[in-house]
Amino acid sequence: MGTPQCSRRILVLLVLLKIFTLICATEVCSNTILPGSKGDQGERGDEGDQGRLGKAGPPGQRGLRGELGSKGNLGQTGKVGPAGTRGNKGLQGADGPIGLKGKPGSTCDCGRYRKVVGQLDINISKLKNAVKFMKNVILGIKETEEKFYLIVKEGRKFKEAQMNCKLRGGALAAPETADTNNLIAEYVTQAGLTHVFIGQCGQGLGGADLDDSHPQNYTAWAPGEPREPPTKDGCVQMSSTGAWSQLECDVTMYYVCEFLKRKRGPPSVL
Image (cartoon, rainbow, N blue to C red):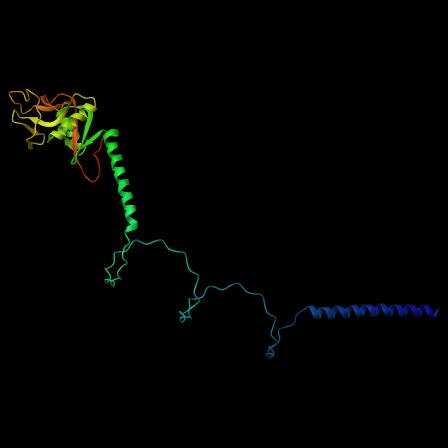
């Protein structure tokens, strides 16, 4: 009987001990959770070790421009740039000093050039003949030593014929010699014409005036010409025989222009 009673006592004792432990634990936990009053400031401790490097911060604002530094050393020569556009032509410079007199040249051996010059003369002669053929046959132009003559196959009144010859650079033909008169008469015959205007104005039996009022002595009037009484306003035509006769200036007829020879060549045939 004594053993069970003893066991109960021990069990009760253990339960009480457990309760006491729990009570003590609650008091300890309560003391830990509740903060105490702020204590006095302690002394400053020693400087600690350097901490780890932190992350890079955001970039700061741009600072003020610094002072101009001193001139640096000359750098290396760069590559040649592209060529620029061509500039305008400059003004002509002053004449330079006269150069030294050159050495005398060697004596020319002209013998070998004579054959060349002779051949050139032959070629020039052939060319002149070809040009003459073109003027006389193709273009129908006649010429003397001083003038060209051209029949214009366009029917015009006397004043209109005068103006047209001037526009071409010449004047109405005015024969001054028998040879010239015969040349024009032959020209008229070859052209298949009977009469053409020439640059004369009737003035009676004494002769004829040129259309520009310059007198001349040569005449080739046909028998009975110029008719009486003389008419200052009358115009002159030449027949294919070379004979002159008066007619009204308002008549429409072909005409002959004459042109002084110049270096620029024969007249226009347009």
